[in-house]
Amino acid sequence: MKKNFKLENLDCANCAAKMETAINKLEGVSANISFMTSRLTLEADDSVFEAAVEAAQKAINKVEPDCLIVR
Image 1 (spheres, rainbow, N blue to C red):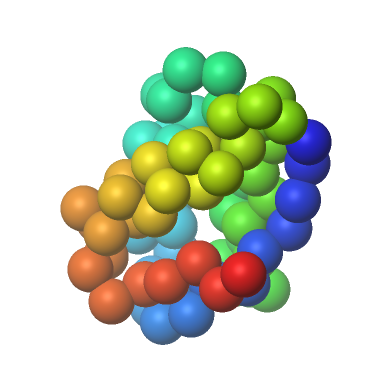
Image 2 (image 1 turned 60 degrees about the vertical axis):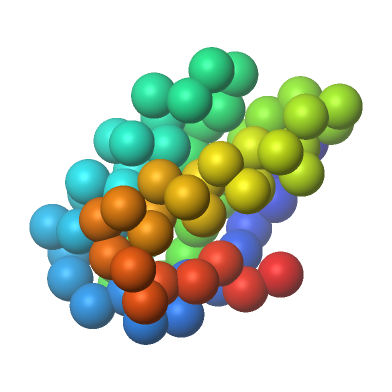
């Protein structure tokens, strides 16, 4: 499954790059973050997609604690 999400409170392009790198290190997850549009494109197997979104949120919070994935 591939889905796009809005990111709230994304403040810095460098942070977006760090978040993308951290999410892409998750097993079976592919991510792309656009700082300009504040969008996260997340791709993972359907059976683990919700867990992947939660893991992505945790990875994002380690870089920028106020940033949220809007569902």
